[in-house]
Amino acid sequence: MKKNIRNILAVAALGFCASASAQNLNSAYFLDGYTYGHQLNPAKDYDRKGYVSFPLLGNINMGMTGNLSLTDVLMFNGNELTTYMNPNIPMEEALRGFSSSNFSHMNTRMDLLGFGFHAWGGFNTFNVSVRTNVAFNAPYELFEATKELANKDYDISGLGMDATAWAEIGFGHSRKVADAWRVGGKVKVLLAGARAMLDVDKAQLNLKAPDKWTLSADARAEVSVKGFGWGEMEHKEFKDGTPYEQIDFGNVGIENPGPNGWGLAFDLGAEWDLGEQGWLDGMKVSASLLDLGFLSWNETHVAYNMGKEVEFTGFNDIKVEDGPGVSVEKQSDDYADRFSSLVALQDGGVKSSANMLGATLNIGVEYQMPFYKKLSVGLLSTTRIQGRYSWNEERISATVSPLKWLEASVNLGFGSMGASFGWVANIHPKGFNLFVGMDHTVGTLSKQGIPLGNNTGVTIGINIPFGKSTM
Image 1: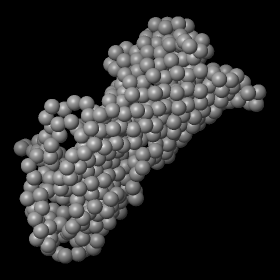
Image 2 (image 1 turned 90 degrees about the horizontal axis):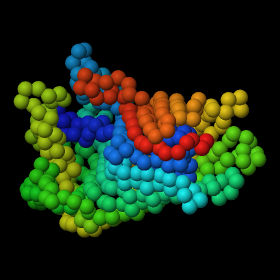
Image 3 (image 1 turned 45 degrees about the vertical axis):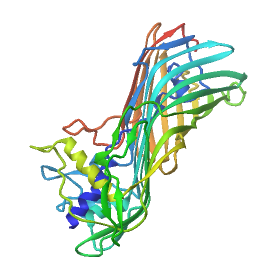
Image 4 (image 1 turned 30 degrees about the vertical axis):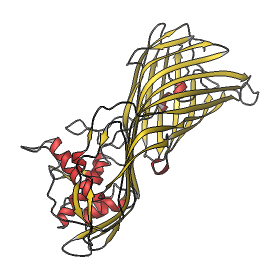
């Protein structure tokens, strides 16, 4: 029985390690010639007359961030790849990679079209982008329960997931408003694509009985996808014998998907040049608040848990790796079946809904070296504001611009996601721009090509600048 319990809980535990994440390329924050500096701070100027992004390849950003890595969950027992739940792996070793709150994020962006130009007293930008934002969170006791399974109660409250996809049309403008001040803003009209949310606010797992276990939870799920349906329900009974219909995630489906609402968001930013203020030559301070806005959904399917005790029995093992007759699709189906039984959700109907976007706050300080004007050092603080999925990171960088068309930066990051090394190279001679960078440099890969560290990512883009450098 307890071996079966371990597999059920592993559905949630393993899921939090599979997410990928990225944000804007923070390593490029202090580069004057970075085409997409306005996505980091809408007050930023551009060192050419303007640019046109290369369709689809102008700016591609993807990666992985969080404080939970694949190596926290998958381990080697001798030459055998196994999970932390393997009984041959000591408890202390198996759980040492987990913290009180274990999280993982995915924020991807692909710019389909974009351009920028100087006019109307400042710098103007336009972009059409497709974006996703995925966040997971899991408490320590989830992993402790899957490994230990002692005869006691476990509090696995705090399980959560929020995934959103949308399209964005943005218009930005920045200008100098005083000798030492530059401000900017961007308005973004949003086209709502899809959203899925799960919030397990309270969950108590009771393993005191030797031959059975029960779980009571306050859980809620919302799926905002046009044409979505839960499908056929599974007939179950609560511990007291009361019948109910439970959602079976294996039966969900989508017919005729499409846009499902709209939204509005703003980016705000400012830069203050202390040298032009007459205080400290070479020093600049800047700040920006990004994605301050909301999405409104026309069709949201709600599911909830009534909070009653549910008893589970009859679960089988799931293999970690593929083998004869064991496909990834089959494993995914097994995970979905077990997770649907774990949270025991009932259909709550359809409604309209709205949610705030996760906002990002950047605060930067840059100092130009007096002995070599083409070298500067900077400190960037980035804070993600998204409830239980919030995080913070500080990044110390050194940026050099030996030529007007060549810039590079290296940096060290630390914060909620641990330590990381970042870099970026930006080549932008007349008529051509190529940039590539990583906020979290890729480390060791598994034989399947999966990064074993908890943070990795890459941003790359090709664009067409016009005009000579003005900086």
